[in-house]
Image (cartoon, rainbow, N blue to C red; front, side, top):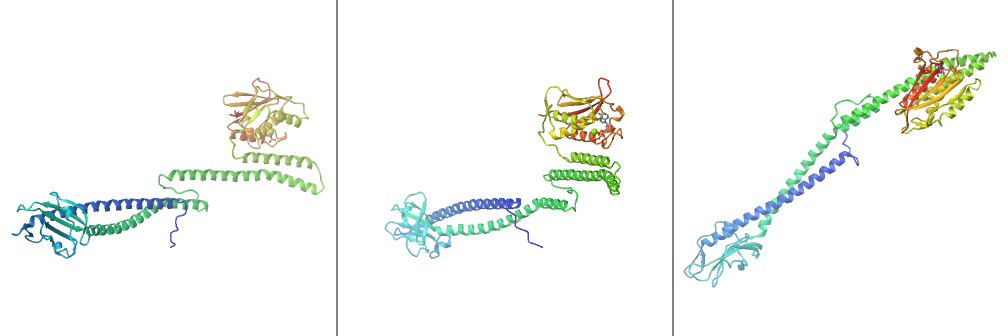
Amino acid sequence: MTAPALPARGSLRLRFIVAILVWIVAGLVVIGFSTSALFRRHVEYQFHDELTVHLVELADLTRLDAAGRPVLDRPLSDPRYGMPNSGYYWQVERDGFPPLQSGSVKRGALDTTLAHQPDIVHRLAPGPTGPTMTYGFARSATDGGSELHFLIATDEQILNDVIGAFDAELRRWLGLMALGLLGTGALVILYTLKPLDRLGQAIAAVRNGSARRMEEGWPAEITPLVADLNGLLDTNDAMVARARVEAGNLAHSLRTSLAILTDEAETLARGETGDSAATLLEQCRRIGRQLDWHLARARASVRQGARTPIPDAIAPIAAAMQRLHAGRTIQFAIDGSAPVALAIEPEDFAEILSNLVDNAGKWAGSRVGIDWRISGPHVLLSVTDDGPGIPEPMRAAVFQVGSRLDEQAPGSGLGLAIARDLARRYGGDVSLEGRSDGASGLVARLDIPLAA
Ligand SMILES: Nc1ncnc2c1ncn2[C@@H]1O[C@H](COP(=O)(O)OP(=O)(O)OP(=O)(O)O)[C@@H](O)[C@H]1O
Ligand SMILES: [Mg+2]
């Protein structure tokens, strides 16, 4: 088993770890400081209570002997006042007598300035073994003489030691808690990010071909992403499948021409010429048209914002057709209304229109008319000829690839199929109609959306 890799820079995992770390450290620092402050306050209250009680006890136990000297009936209940330098001290004073002190005082004395009023006051004052919390008050004597001064003191160090011990324990405990929280945080990260790892594996499986689609059963946040991915994969599959069929079609459509060309080449090799030139020409033209058709189909997507202005784009096509059909006296007339722009690439428009005008030129008696009108968001462009036309029932069939009504006439039967395929890519169409004036002939209609 390999050790888990460190999270990469900028990874979600690293973000989670940093966030959890900051969260835990900040949280525990706040908890640590506030707990310590609370505990200090609590301990100080307790010391205050205890020392006040001891002070009152001291005063109550004190009486005057026959000479008026203060003496204690019995020692204070807390034995620490009897242990030398214990940090717990008391002192009773009366003017004219030596101070009465607890057994714990082995050197020095307590600060008596504190014990000159009837109410108990306290402050930090120097003591026998360092700074002390000193409490004091004065009480008038029972013999009516000078008053008695009572003092109780506890080393501040004792309070600090109690708080210090608590803080040390608190730090240890918070440290353990930090480790525990980090551990569970890591588990949480591992658990919540697991689907992302699975996602990576599922995508890798699709990439290396061991799966065709992404599996099901994802968390709600990832499900739409997986659905989109599967949609993309399906579209891709469809595109690849279409490309396969297209490639097959191309190969198939060229095979016949190739067979004829080979045959003709063999004829030429045998020294016979016949009408090989015409056949070769015819086949070359057929191959060219086949390639046109397949290239037109291969143009997978339509760019947004395509624009072709008419009649500007029609004139050169009409002129080219005029030359192509120069052998026959056919008039190509543009009878359009106002200029408009079509939402189609100029090259695609030229491809469509030249197919329609070429057909019209081939079949027309004497005239081919090109006109257009706007119909809603579309432009309807008509190419009208005065040839034999196509009987209504046959009109749909001539859009089939390779479909030709008159096998004697030149052509490969691809023109209309290419024209319709291209027009449909732009949201338009190509259709065939009879002439509305009842005369013989055909109207090829091109419908293309108006440009914005
Ligand atoms: N204006 C028209 N008048 C009469 N028949 C037409 C007209 N246009 C097309 N046709 C018929 O429809 C068939 C299909 O036309 P299409 O343009 O698809 O192929 P093609 O002209 O034969 O060959 P290609 O255009 O590929 O050189 C034609 O062979 C013809 O029989
Ligand atoms: Mg044609």
